[in-house]
Amino acid sequence: MRLARLLTPEGPVAGRYEDGAVVADDGRYEVGRDGRLLPPCEPSALYCVGRNYAETLDQMEYERPEEPDFFIKPPASLLAHGQPVRYPEWTDELTYAGELVAVIDERCRDLAPEAVPDAVRGYTVMNDLDALDQGGRTARKAFDGSGPLGPWIETDVDPAGMAMSTTVGGERRQEANTDLMLFPPREIVSYLSRRFTLRPGDCVAFGSPANPGLVEPGERVEITYEGVGTLSNRVVAGDEG
Image (tube, rainbow, N blue to C red; front, side, top):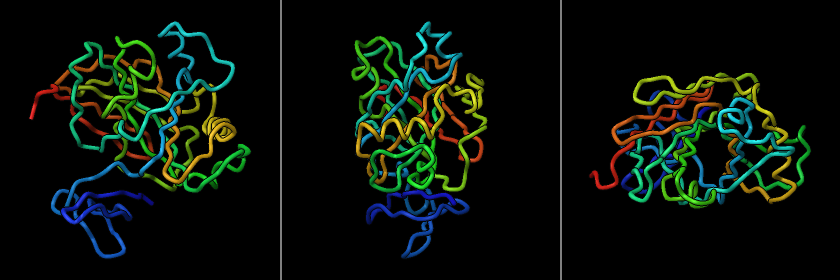
């Protein structure tokens, strides 16, 4: 099942996504006609794991971590599927990175790896935007609109063995499989739950495969995870209306 949120003139609605519509308790809302998609959840934080693919380590000349290496994006970083990514005026090196994301379903802490599936609502897709020329991870990765997320949450999918691809301006830039992760999803969520109380709607992103790269205004980034869906956002100049 796909779960989505829609912004209507009367406010947000949430429900099942079916054939271009969100089916809520009070009726059916057509995407585009009745409103636009919102990020599919409302996290208190987005926990993002980096350096989780061996090829990425080689490409970026990083050392292999002994445990998951993570950082946090705030809710202000969220951007919905289909919404424009505004290129920040203070960077000249904006990069994309296609990541699989688990959405937490219940308040939890100290999860064993085998208990993680019961605590996860489902999976969605994130573009981990990075202003590469800024100093420090927070300045690079935690700005407004730096975490496009969506288009929905897929509840009936196994993150193991999942193929992914990223295209930029119609050109394929990333292609990989989640089996190439150094730390698998269950291990990562368990690891984070020993440090943080995870809340409903919180997001855990599992890192990007090789070839995250520069993106320019006018280019559209499309990230697909097999069985989940495709997140699509166009990059625009900061002053574009």
